Length: 282
Ligand code: ADP
Ligand code: MG
Image: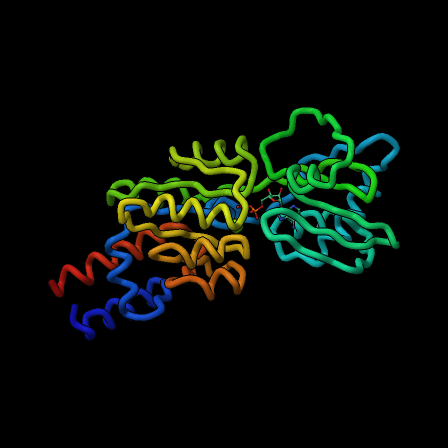
């Protein structure tokens, strides 16, 4: 590959809203066989809203949402933004701690409050609470030092371009995989809607790295598309790391390519561009 052709390709990428970090990235993009996608903020818009609230005995709905919003105020996760937007009252939080892909904790009015995935809350060892069937969505349980206080289900919207982008990637011969920290049921529902057959759900940020390594078996070339802090390590592990421009700084820093367009067809354009660029110089 001549350096000048690669530079032309890189320039063409910029016009398409695809920021390519260095000419050698196009050569790697051309060889990609498997492409893993994060769900929240990548396949979905990440503009989430509270879809359902269930509270434990003697806990009020407003009280639950206010406690959750207080601890979520320190997080930039789309789930956090939805919960914060659902309340009028903003209470301060102290000793805030964020565990990416799991949840948050902090002190609200002196009381320790946790909000996170069912696994994160179960690890506290409080007595389990039975909830009614949840609608499709990300599940956030809320607890204090001694008990589970409630459950919030946060719903997301699939990007209008997602199904089209997946279909086009399949036409190019790529195998798509959905890689999500979210629960199995929700991940499967989203995957089915956009045409992805292989789903890895309930994976922690470290688990995402392991899945990428597994997909890389036998020298297969793997791309990872993501936006969150929880995706950064998997993006770095992939042969081709792709970050959504709307994503966190950590994801963008870990990537070889940043997609400045919201629509996922930009990912297809990146693969097409790499093939076109390298075809002209072979
Ligand atoms: P995804 O891989 O779909 O982007 P994440 O890895 O960010 O999902 O999150 C996985 C799960 O962890 C969420 O579905 C949620 O249950 C929980 N979680 C992550 N971050 C938060 C947060 N800030 N507040 C509450 N729950 C969270
Ligand atoms: Mg995400």
